[in-house]
Length: 81
Image (cartoon, one colour):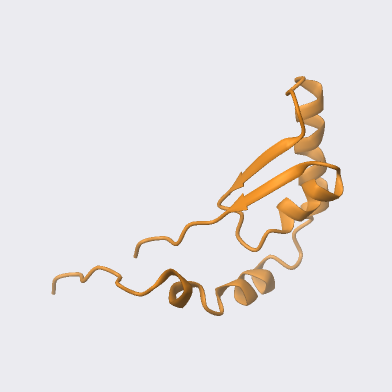
């Protein structure tokens, strides 16, 4: 059988996925690893407070960085199946 390309719209692809992702990651300590990265940014003297969160998923880390005062843009792309 030949695989057919995924022709579903990005919205159709992600419908319901965010809720499932949140269930799977509900016990993750985003606050800890967001602070770890913020400390690394500070330690290495990265200029500015603007961050791009690529493949941000449901945005929990982006919100954590925003809570720390960063200006965050979160981007997530649909994956090809």
